[in-house]
Structures are given as structure tokens and as C-alpha cells.
Length: 80
Ligand SMILES: [Zn+2]
Image (tube, rainbow, N blue to C red):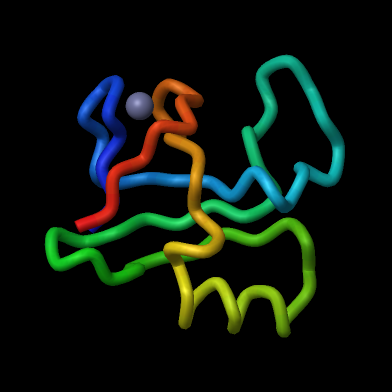
């Protein structure tokens, strides 16, 4: 499962490749955010991109997409 090397978050991650639709100071870090369970499977995915192909691909290859910690914004994500 993914884990943030900085804060230890293993639950919620965003994709830096998918910018939020409307960037705001306190807005979401990404247009694509997923929650993971302890096995590393996505339990929930929130997409502002409104692009079903992208959502499907991110679901199948989360490692390629979720590279940003939703808790602290770090890009140091460890996958194991
Ligand atoms: Zn973090």
C-alpha cells in the first residue's frame, strides 16, 4: 500500500498529474483523490476531472497516479 514517507499517512492520496478544476488556497490538492484500505486497494475515488477513462486507468494502476500525500502534500510516497 502507499505510505507517505513524511507523515506516515497510508489512507488518502492525490495525483499531481491531475490538477484541481479550480485551484484555491484551501481547495483540494488534486483533481483526483483516492482512499486506500490496509491492503492497498482503493476504497473510494474522488475525481473532479470528470474523465472516465482516466478514472478507470487510475483505478487499475494507482501507483502511476497517486503520488501526493493528501495529508501533508509530500511527494515522497513509498509503495510496497
Ligand atoms: Zn504525508
